[in-house]
Length: 285
Image (cartoon, rainbow, N blue to C red; front, top):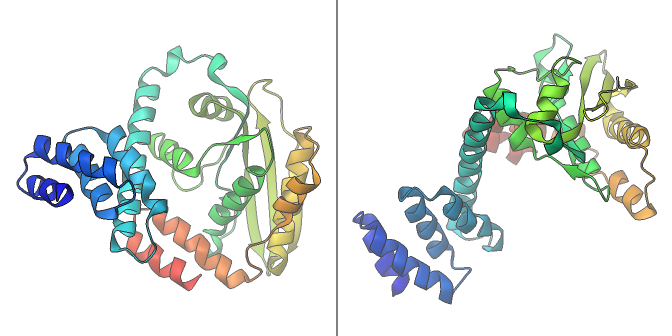
């Protein structure tokens, strides 16, 4: 009754009454998807983005069969991007005041690998590879990985374009804005079904020139290549892995290159906010 009354108030734009009733409903049943969605929407309309995000983040507790799960997840992703964008706009406005004391030596940001080839069908591969590197580094205890939505938003705000290329001039600035002590970036190319990746982990705190890690293999062995690259980066960071960490990094979710390429195209279209196309590619994957 409280939920349905709150929804009626929301639909008639009486947001104060909607919030009160939906909050009372939420306090009684925390995982009701309809309550979560309309409570979050009410808070959004009232200008409380942070509160709405706290409601939407519970989408993972909602059944996969509920139509509200996709609505909740969609609002969570969209709102997260908007909040992160505002945060970076504020940081950029006061960039000159930012000091190195906010940088965490154990925080790592992985940027999309820049494509050096001419065949456009491989261009999205850099997004998928960087996502795999990010996921694998996230298995290392003590390292904090910067989520890709923050990196995408920062690149958009700085007008970096598609490449997101990092060099000695831009690395310290990006590290400071992301509070990341390490930035992993590089390039890749596919030629005659052979994949070559050149990557480095920039040390923002010490400002040391990174050693470039180069791996090359047949495109069909890209998962093996990515693992070797990750282990090289971890070695350069001076980290000794436990057996559990090593096993977690070695896990490969698929060995189907075509599935992975569709996943990469899904990432590319999601980053471009073309969610319909992204959904098609994710379904194909």
